Image 1: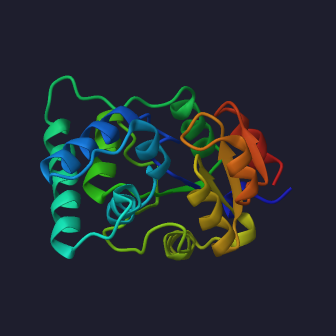
Image 2 (image 1 turned 90 degrees about the horizontal axis):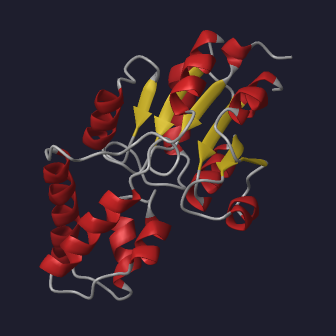
Image 3 (image 1 turned 45 degrees about the vertical axis):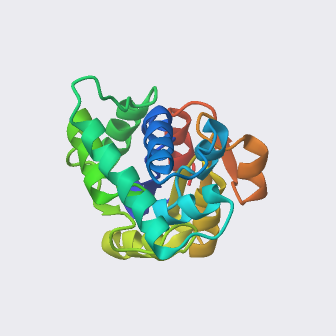
Amino acid sequence: MTSPAEILVVFDCDGTLVDSAHNVIACMQKAFQEAGLPIPDDLSIRRTIGLNPDVAVRDLAGRPLSFEQLDQIVTGYKTSFFHQRLQIDHHEPLFSGVRRVLEGLAARHVSMAIATGKSMRGVNAVIAQHGLEGYFGSLQTPDHNPGKPHPQMLEKAMAMAGARPDRTFMVGDTSFDMMLAKNAGCRAIGVSWGYHDEAELRESGAERIIDHFEELIGVVEAA
């Protein structure tokens, strides 16, 4: 068995660590409404979670947008999400088992990182809300990277951790995460509780799909 110290586990955020679908849908629909454009349905928005906001908006619009329209919707979405976080009842709950797995990987000296379509501000808010400071060696977001499935986020995470692609696991809930892993030469682990179904995860490169977060410990120990 390879020493756990040589392993890097990189997590997606929305749909993998936290359940944020309701918030994303509400904010995206509000942004389209304020721009005077047709409001995308819930399912369509769920399928774009994980993409950079500008890419998601283009996909959801279903027609070409001017730069001004794109900027208005993306800015409206981000602003709405920021104000939503300030509400007393705002919550993006951790999925079951997340904290136990992070603690277990840390105890095994496994390096961890996040690679997400969420903004750095949003990721930091999730970490602060749930007291996850200290677990992640790097946070890779669209603020300083191309969006998924471009490999740069994983490449930077590996460089910072000193990890090899064949010992790096990308854990995510969408085909974008699996393609990101494939493009970076890493191992792709899908989770069944997120926003894309099992068939899509396998077709896009998942070598394994876990139904419970705790299964990830066994995946890492078997590496």
